[in-house]
Length: 585
Image 1 (tube, helix red, strand yellow):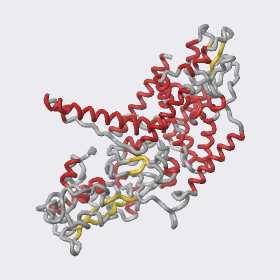
Image 2 (cartoon, helix red, strand yellow):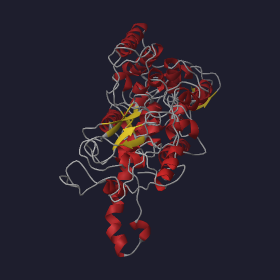
Image 3 (cartoon, rainbow, N blue to C red):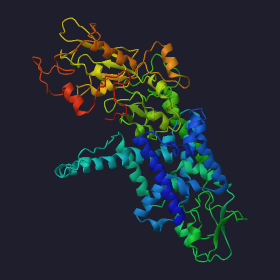
Image 4 (cartoon, rainbow, N blue to C red):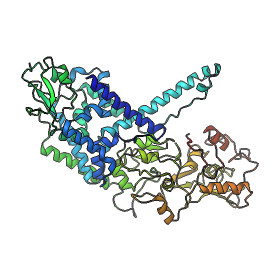
């Protein structure tokens, strides 16, 4: 038992280390999505729904092979979801209800598995409903990690006066980024229910609901290492009472449900006469109870999966088939750079939240029903929360199923996520005739130009669409606070299943490059007379706060100077970057 606890601790620590590494640096010696690629439900479900098999899916195949030979060791020792449920049961002191199994409930995970499988056959991924690794990544990455960073940040704020008094500058200037995510209350309520269900039985999720466990249970029937009970057994029932999975017949302890046994060895350790052992010798095989559901029940769950899939495919927001007249698409749903075409993206995305945790600017957020039921919890770029760094490809590296393709930095810049649009009725320059050039100053690609407008004393901005990559720096820094006067739409997004984004973009007439910025700044410094590069000499950067009829602190606005200083950012006059490398909000 101590050995198992040590292995579980190491496994959970490794999982959290990879997750924190992805959330802080985005790089590491080991792929941050390693555990996700060990989940057989993620791999098999995505392979079926996405009609795609990747070399990165091999870890799940290894897990299945280990299960065939040694049983469900992954569930008992490695799975972070099972370990977390174990910890919850121990904290809630639920040991008394360990061995009390409910045979009828054991069938639920097979129903869920068949539901997900049939849905995947129709091309709709429902893996996110029951994948243990997807769910636990959401818990730790999108809920627990932000809460911890928030509390640390509050602690630093509380000790700042003390640090200032004693001149402890390391603490005085210390800061920590605290990400924020949508759908947190759903994650909180879901896991509250999972942990509370331990009052019914220990490892309630693993016993009755986990479809990945159902896959491994089917393969574990062929395991060559099994529990064996000798004739020394006194039928005291202690092993049956303490089995965390309820896999032992309390009336006949020699009978074991090999599909439910996770090889925890608790029964062997607690046996008072050492009658229990695990080996490859001859075993008396008898499953207790019969946990495989009836054919009719499986048929019903399969029909439910087909109904779920077809309801999504025929829904208003369905992307089935080629885009055309009459297709409705959300105007503000911007996918991460490198995302596959929408139908393939949703078929492969398992909603684990790994890409969101890996985003250094907290720009990726889970969505609710903006894409219908089929798109629940999938990632969306929200520039107002954070812009997308041109040299960051963390989301693609962290994605376990390559719903977001892992691109090199150069190709990543050409992965156009959308196009910026200007709302003239809200723009300071267009509507209020106040000098503002913030969108141009922060754009890494120099995709904003200014021109003269008859009757307007200040130059007004326009978007050069072929240069815009949809990064959202303009939207993020726009000084109009209630709703940015410039925003990114998915129009013109480049999404490919294969091939080079750069080659495709050039063939479509795009001209996306960071070099534009250096050329423009050089033109401004040399006094370039063209209206595309107007000087703002004599005015506050990006904003004329003293213009008649306008208050610098009018509700809904702030000056560009305040906006930039409050975010502690610098526009570098550099030929390659206009945002400092490694910049975070």
